[in-house]
Structure formats: C-alpha cells, structure tokens
Amino acid sequence: MNTRRLFIVAGCLAVCCSTTAAAEADYPRYSISAATEYTTGTYGGDVDIEDIYVPLTGTVDLKRTSFRITVPYRSMRAPEGTTIVGPGGEPIPGPGELRTNSGLGDIIVSGTIYDVFHSRRLRLAVDLVGRAKFGTADVDDGLGTGENDYSARIDVLKFWEQFTLIGAIGYKFRGDTPDTDFDNVLTASVGGIYSFTPQLRGGLFLDYRESAISDNDSIQELSVFLSRRVSDDWRYQVYVMTGFTDSSLDWGGGIQVKRVLRNRPGD
Image 1 (cartoon, rainbow, N blue to C red):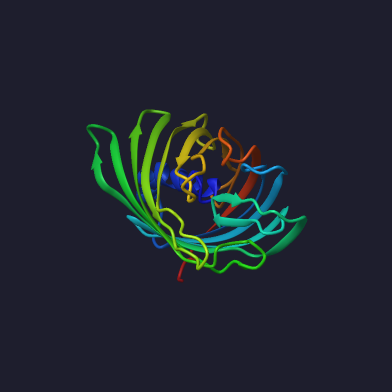
Image 2: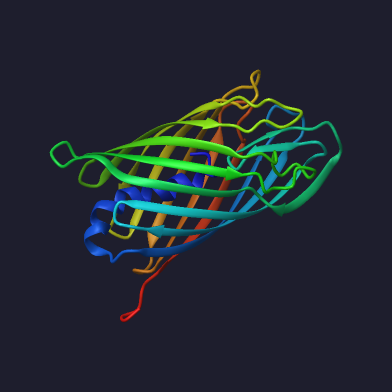
C-alpha cells in the first residue's frame, strides 16, 4: 500500500464503489481530500526517524477512469544525510546529528482505468493504475531524491455480498541520482474490505515492496483501516500500520478527510 498507504486504501474504496457509483453519480465528479500521517522507525539505522506527511489531493472521476494529483507537505526528524527515496517512505539513514527538515514533498499524479476486465458471473474486476512521482521535494534536506519515478499496477477484485478481496501487483521505475543508482522494484499487495453497514467499511492489507537499495531488506507492512461516510459529500478514514523488516517502519497511523464536490443544477 505504499504511496503513501492511505492512497491505495482510498483507491480501493473507490474501486469497490465504482460499479454502484456509476449508476448513481453524475460525471465528471470532483473531490478533494486532506490527510495527516505519522510514521516512525529505525529503517536499519541506530535511531528513530520520525516522518509527518500531510497530502492534499484532488480527484476527477469519470465513468470508467479517474485522475488524481497529490501535493504533500513533509516534515522529517532524522540524522543529517538521511534521504527519503519516495512518497512511500523507505528512508536511507544518514550518519549525522538529528535534525528536522520540512517542506514540499514529491508531487504525485495518477490515473486509473476501471473494469478493464469485468465479469458479473464471476463477480470479478480488473483495473489498471499508472502513476508518476515528480522530484519536487528538497534534495538538500533529504525530503526526496530530486528524480522522477514511474509505476504501473494491476488491481484484481473479487466481490462477495459484504466483502471484497483485493490483490495488486505492480512495478516501479526509479530515477537515479548522480550519486546513487536505485533499483527498479516489484510491488504487491493483498487484502480485503468489509462493509459493516452502508456507511462503515473496514479493511486490512499486507504490502510488499522490494527495496530500492540492492542490499537492503524488502519492505513488508500491515495496515488496518476504518472508513466512515458521514453524509453524501463527506467521508473520513483512520488507519494504523506496522512493519516486519529492517527496511520497514516500526509503526504509524493517520487520518484522512474527503469531500465530494457536487455540480449545482445549471452548472
């Protein structure tokens, strides 16, 4: 789920709703969301690296496609020389003294094509997702690599009455810096979303990503979330996560609020 983790959860929620939403919503449909996420971990180093990630996201939904742009603020307390490889975290610990750096993070744009394959008989759907990360974060402060990354992902969804099983596999192409050749990496995720009521959903995802550094452990993390729709226009979700390898976070959590912007009659 690393893009940050909340984005794939939000994407999966959108996917789960896409079939019914197509019948209910007028298109195009616009929404904005804001979130705050806190994570901490040593990431193979000796001291904790604390990361606060605050993304603002705008989304345009069409009947079978969706486009999203995310502009994040990031604040990181870490040893001097630490570098964040991408929006999904994976800091490379530096050797210096602890310091706090803050500023604009890497801007992300993505697009999703829904129902590339869809079978009502099998209750199965396949979606395609493409994403680009632009190296807008400050390199000197370690908030990013300064390079662009590109990724593609396939999501497979199997529907039951109240439960949706989701599996995803993708590949990320890393931009190299003058000092470091980052590896292109395989990503994968598996989990599910359960509808407790029409307004309340919860889910669990296990995420895997190869490290951008050849000798480092892969990233393996578990996320659990709850999402509640409080009205036709407002939804919020909370989530917590933990990691299982030296390259993963120790723990973290966040909250996201989403607002659907509806067209007024006559617009």
